[in-house]
Length: 409
Image: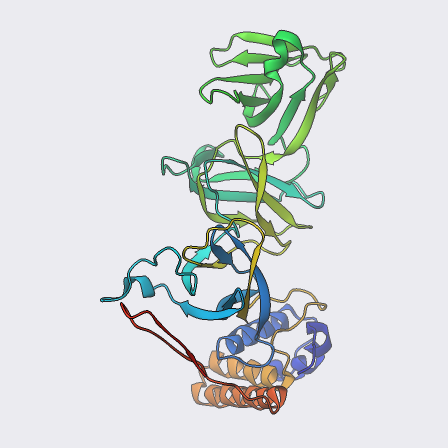
């Protein structure tokens, strides 16, 4: 097995695709991606799995986007069983896993973040690079009362809340600081909630009483703080009224913060992101203390994040723990010539590319022959990669009400 990039094999693949195709043709890239995806789903071949360390958050393992599933699991130096989602629902089975059953690893399906939100929080987004005006991210989920979070977009309600990722897009929060004396209560983070007469409007919730809030509005010569009944509480005099961020009144400062949702979420079940220039980092923000915890780090080409999660019953440590897993790699489309191939066997890629072409021409018999040849090449490669290694089969039995029988090698 050798390392290969798309750029290093596209000339060879172009020669056999559709009786000769230009190496720069976008269809060749699409055909290569399809061939890789199909071969990855055919079995465990060289380069399609590996050993990795994964962090534990709240008693759960969430695999990075590069991995599809866990094949083997080792916790605190001891191997343990990996069970699918049906395990806790088997007739006459153990039922919901008991606390302390850390020798099990239970499949919990797919999630959009590597970390869950433990209480209702706002969602804040940081971008590594300056993004275009068309770059957005949409969060879908529910609040603490299990009500779906909905917002108005272009005059209609949508499921979730969308943030524009470009600078100065108007949905960034502001940090108001510098008030002293009786006005000190108005210092804090004001979350963007929309426009009022063409200028942004922000909402501030009292850190001691979430039912008490005030607004700061640009009106337009001054920033004015109003209560929920629209009474003026204070005015931040703008000597040089420049929108959106100004330092005013000598010591009072308004500072742009990262894009933050207007709504608080208790759970997120989907994230939709446009392709971006750089990485996007997502944080859950406590509405009272303002403390942040990272819940997702999204790659530039990652538009519909989805990660496999497993639970370790009875192990609730939130920070600082890792487990060792043997994981199957997940198909991620290649985009550029520098992207690494997962299936690096050139012969197998050629045969699968031809098989796909035969299939599209409704020649299924020949397609199956080329596909089988591709798998044969992968099996031959695996034998060479494994060499003289001897795999020791493991038998582990669990008997209900009888304790556990140790591993038998």
